[in-house]
Image 1: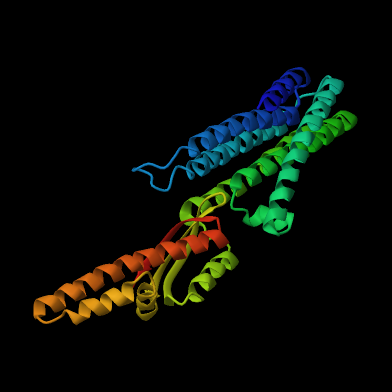
Image 2: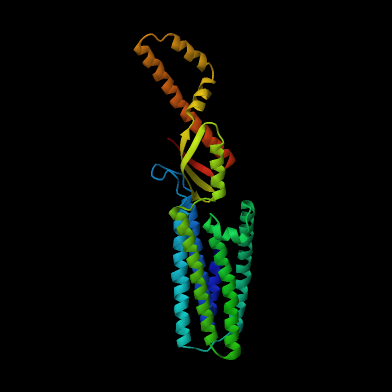
Length: 326
């Protein structure tokens, strides 16, 4: 944040003394980065609040809300303002001044933004390696739009500095300020593209993005291979936060397998046999059947807990699991 604030201030000063539209676009770009990363930090902090009665799945999605607001801010502040200024400069060209100051400021910004991009790319590579996918695949399908958003913003910053430098240089060499205005338009269009990608990614998450089919299928295989399960229906999975998913399925349990498991615990089989020996009246029959029903109902709950623990041990990202008996 401090880095972006310093860069934005330096570019604003450079614009004041050069009159460059491309420099203005870069100053707005850096200012937008500063405010947008402030929003991301704010959203990330609020998303770490613990779940409560009002939000039983926690506040993780709040970071996506603020990330989307960040994308909208980039579009209007970064794309809109720079594009407007570029068109104005194209229609009302003015000579440029202090080329050295402008290029020096861009060079400083390039070093700082380049370092930030290097750190962001290393983080993307690390996360992609953990997921066993390529960096490009991770950028397109990553469950965490924050890392992707930071990487895209840093990439746009580096490209914008290069474009701004070229536009400033061409305008000085040729004496035609139109090159500088076109540089501003290019930067504005690039920021619009980045903003669209950030908004689209967060939109998918907020609407309920499905987790990778291979991971969902792994959970399905775990359940189907268990003797207590006959079949699964209405299987759904969704991301609720980076690295956190929810799994839901309707389960047709094997009542015979659950009964056998119950009878195999402790002395349940012997106790049931002794209870049956004492059955003489209808009331005795009802008493024994009610007791068996209660125990089997409790056994079903134990089986659900066992299956959920088994899923979490194999697929720890599924922290919220809903198995509904049919």
